[in-house]
Length: 333
Image 1 (spheres, rainbow, N blue to C red):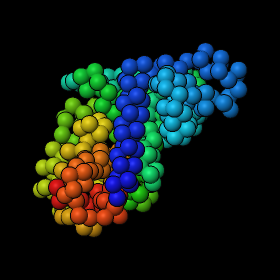
Image 2: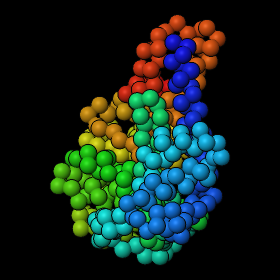
Image 3: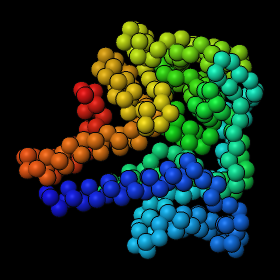
Image 4: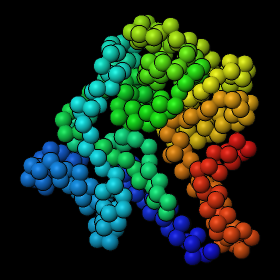
């Protein structure tokens, strides 16, 4: 058991190293890779751009040859993807909804852009059976703009590949009476309102300025706006006092920026699932949130194993690290 748990711990440490490097790159110099860089490496061969991008990053991230090989082979080559601007711009929301540049209170509607070959996270992490966690880095080969809602100058939500990709599966599953926690720019509400399987959508949003911006500038453009009801309320107050009475078929929660502020809110909302056994619950970037919880649990187990205070088996330990167990476990934390 000691050998296996040390293997898991080592993989976790490598994951942490990779995500630290990727976060530093994306936060501090996402435009490090340029058209000139890619052209010099590939000699204009578009088919080699993803490999060139991954290899370039691996060599920037480390000077150690062994680490470069691990970074490139196990993480970056499976991670990096050139995205199609044409496919992205076919998104129904982007095709049909026009976002004006306007503001109310501390909230602003506007646009941002990705430069050619600027890196960004384009979907939730991929987790391999050996616990390798692969960040998903995307890029476009041309500049591309996307609508954004800002809170006090800081991006709160944007209709960019990450949101489109990470909301794709939840949108596909939505049916019947839908409850949504978090309004943002209204992307999720629009997409599910277009589904024949969806009867109505209740969106819970606590900020009146966000509601006003949406209702004045965005909602009137929705073909099926009659399906949508906006409720001004704190999400957890609504969950506690009204969610059960609503008899919702499907509940989607999107209240956080990322994992850093998402874990506690995720755990808090999960506790209400038991009160609505007939509702199906989904959560934005749940894989990434579960990863954070997984390694918190592992830390406790690892300490007990090292101290000789754990009496279980490695099979039991790995059972505790599975998403299915974590989803149930957090309801009782």
